[in-house]
Image (tube, rainbow, N blue to C red; front, side, top):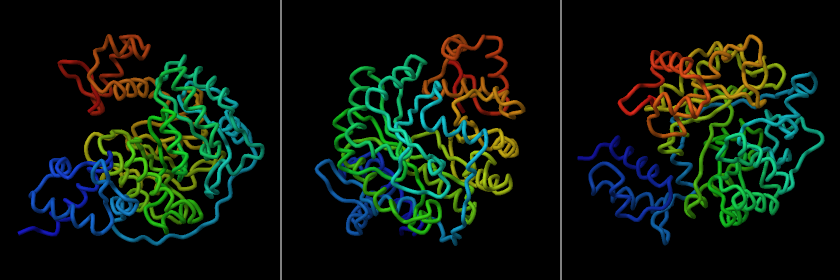
Length: 414
C-alpha cells in the first residue's frame, strides 16, 4: 500500500529530476527512487496535470511544473510596506560608481547596463540618474581585464541586461570567440525567450535567475508589482527544454512586511531548482548607506531557517554593501559561510570589519569549491598565492570548525 508521503516524495523527485533538462521515460524512471509502478503512475499524473510535457527529447518541466516544485509549505500573509532608499552620502556615491561600472575589480561579473524594465522597491538601480550601457567592444575589454586577473568565467549582469538586446548577443559571441571562457547572463526576474534563443546560438553557457517569489503574492511583496512572475517561469522552462543551463540565486531577504520564515523557505527552495549545486547565494535587503532594513534578530531567523531546511554540503554566500552592513553580519556568527563585498574590494580595507580575518579563508574555500577534487597544501598554495605556513594555519582553523577536512588525496570542503 502506498502512503501519501511516498506519493508526495515521488512527485517531488520526478519534478526535481527534470531541472537538468528533458529525460526519456526510461531514464526518468531510473533517476527516481521508489516502486516502479508508483513512479510510472506519477509521471502520467504529472503529465495529465500539465506539470510536465512530452518533447522530442523526453519529458520536460512546464512553467506550472516549476512553480509546483517550489510551492510554499504554507501560505503567508504579506504586507506591502513603503521603502525609502538613501539618496545622498559618501557610501551611496561610491556604490553608484560601482554598479555603473566605473570602479574596476577582479570579480568576473560585469555590469553591462544600469537600466531596468522592473522597479523593485528595494533595488539600488532606482537611484541611478544617468544610466550606463556598455557597447560590445567595451564589454569585451572588461572581460579581458578580468581574465587577466585570473577569472575563467564571465557573468554579464546589471539591472536588466536583456534590454541591450542585440548588443548583448554580440558581446557574448565576442567573448566566447576571443577569450574561450564560460559566459553567463545574470538577469533579474526574467528575460525574453526569443533573446534566449539568440544567446544560446552565440555560445551562452548558462543563465542566472533571481528567485523573487514562488507565488504571485510573494512576488508582489518582494518586487512591489506582479510583472515578471509568469515570464520568469516561461523563460526557465524554455532554457531547460532547450539545453541551456540555468542557475538560481535566492534574491533578497529581510524586507519589511515579509515573514522571515517565508524568506527561509524561498531560499531553501533554491536547492530543488539547483540540484547538485553546493552554493546558495542570497542577500539581505539593505539601504546602501544605512545597511539592512531588518535587524540582526530577523536576519538570524532567516539564516537559521535556511540552515535547518537545506541538508548536505551547502555553502551559504551573502553580500554586504558598506561598513554599516557589517555589524549585522557579525551578529549572524557562523550561519553564513562567505560574505562577498559588492563594492569589489577586499574586506581588509574596511576598518573594524569582523570578516577581515576571513579574507584568506574565503580565497581558500573558493579554490576548493571550484576545484571539485581534493588539493594538496602545495597545490593550494600555488592556486591561492598564500604562503604555506599561513595556509596551513588557516586550514587547521577551518578543519576545527568543520568547514574542510583532510583526506589521503588532500584537502576538500566538508
